[in-house]
Length: 86
Figure 1: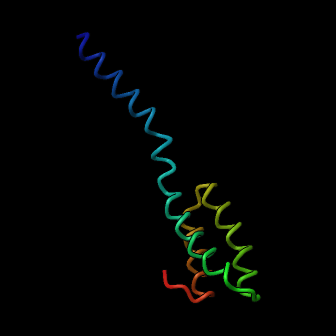
Figure 2 (figure 1 turned 135 degrees about the vertical axis):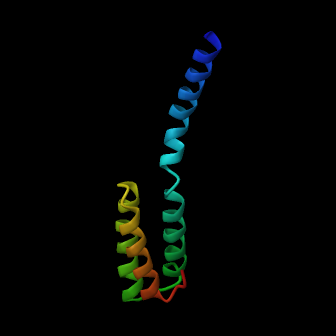
């Protein structure tokens, strides 16, 4: 009985400690999108690059708010505007 309780408590603690790490998993995709856009925008100085810089801020905010699907859509549109292949 004692072993069962210890095992259950251990599993609960592991789940509790791993939850924040799993919640931040989707940020990896956001970081990739932002890095691709910033790499292209860094070498350009036109209207599209200025608009892309503004979109990067919105994409980052959406990712932090957990709106990954909307962030992905905005990132893909921005990359298409800049001529970047996803």
